[in-house]
Amino acid sequence: MSVKIRLKRIGTHKKPFYRVIVADSRSPRDGRFIEEIGTYDPVKKDGPVKVDEVKALDWLKKGAVPTDTVRSLLSKVGIMKQFAAPK
Image (tube, rainbow, N blue to C red):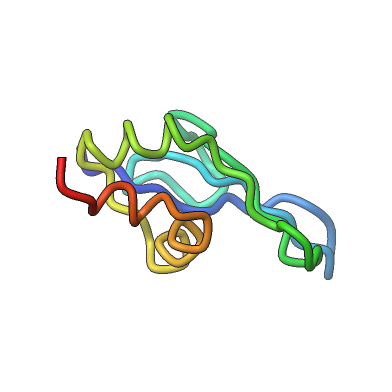
């Protein structure tokens, strides 16, 4: 089972809102997921990303692979820097 950290779209037409989730790579975009670790609101300009750092780092250490978009969002928050830091 390959696990990915990706976005799940919710919200209305032309007002997107996303949840950052951990899901099996075979499940559909808005389908079943393992755990929700944060939110992303692209409409807001101030602080659109909220991610639980402990959960995100835990899943990254377990081998979950973030998508390109989620990787850039985690980099903005500083989680990827913590993950890449020498232990």
